[in-house]
Image (cartoon, rainbow, N blue to C red):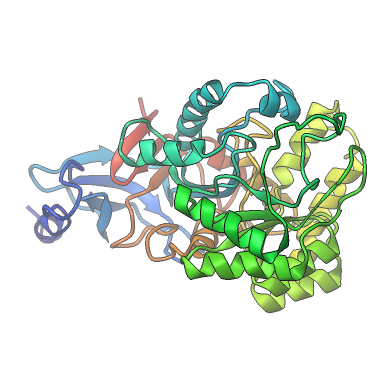
Length: 426
């Protein structure tokens, strides 16, 4: 046995102790070029990554695996951390399959939950080992049940941080356009006034929420333009109540005023940011608020409306891409949040490709779905990098994603917490 092999054998039992996940077999992935912890480059030479107890134990130069340790040959592949999507809706499916209104009003909770299990597996097999699921859209607390089923090993899926029901103002969310005499079910939880918002946050925390999501603006009638909904005091009450329980807040916001209120009130992320001005983006940058622009969802809706690649881009898509460029110029941190559910689960990497097209370098676009996303979640010491002590969430690719972001669509091997989830090497 080589000296490196002997050191590796000594290291493996440390994380294979009874306190760790004893069912996760010590494993060595050997022969890949590994992405540096800062995401800037791949190793010049093939190396091994040793995993035990669901975590990365050590990374080193070429060496055979010690006896009794399973070796996975990834020679010639590129190894990146498990990817993170900060904006998914596992309880939704593409709008060209069924309109959002129909999913909320006509599909049973049971059928939606079953679909979400399939969506979770597709997401994981695409290399996304962690997601923040931002609202069940009328499916109550099904995301919490799905999260717990995945965590217990009952069903395969990414690590899920659940937001349960988004919080909206009365009359500030859909389904819209129905006779006001009828009490039509909503896709979110309505709350009004600082006390009402605090109560809603408390209810969601008690039901198992990991994040709180609220709508800082929305259209109030069918076909109307979005306008700010919650006051800054109401948003501040939500942020304060969530912070008391150690939870962060994400805000759907598309108008400058909605974004500004949310940023001043202390939210962690702004979702979409459609009409952001330079002044709004400067405020986000000064407050350290992260933008998830969900460009992939805008593109998907354009495609569902009849636009095709090769034709002039619809104004809405041009605007979404321009927003990313403006945000980069303003110094705003842009992170990967795709809004999957609007389009097919498993196509989440399209957001990374689009961020690259919009002006981020390929390395920064990949960071948006790894280390930058991990920081948003407060998990920067757990996920988002290939480094000793981090979760053994690993994706092997046939091509260098720093040279071509589309390589992320081609996972050959997906490992989550040291377990092989997908293996297409043969």
